[in-house]
Length: 58
Image 1 (spheres, rainbow, N blue to C red):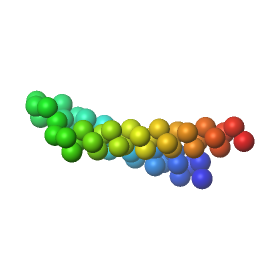
Image 2: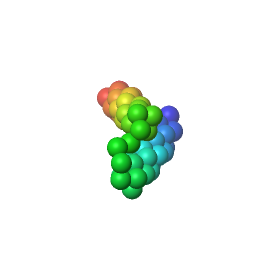
Image 3: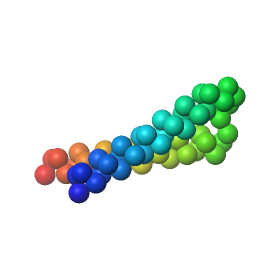
């Protein structure tokens, strides 16, 4: 399970970086939808990291 969680975390971080790069290149304030996606990904990454920490503590 650890490997699957780490892979998911990596994919989410990569997708989040791409959204942030696109927002930066646009030169304008990102749309509410884009900001929401970036924030949602951050929350998901945090949840995955919590799960990984819990597994490590066992």
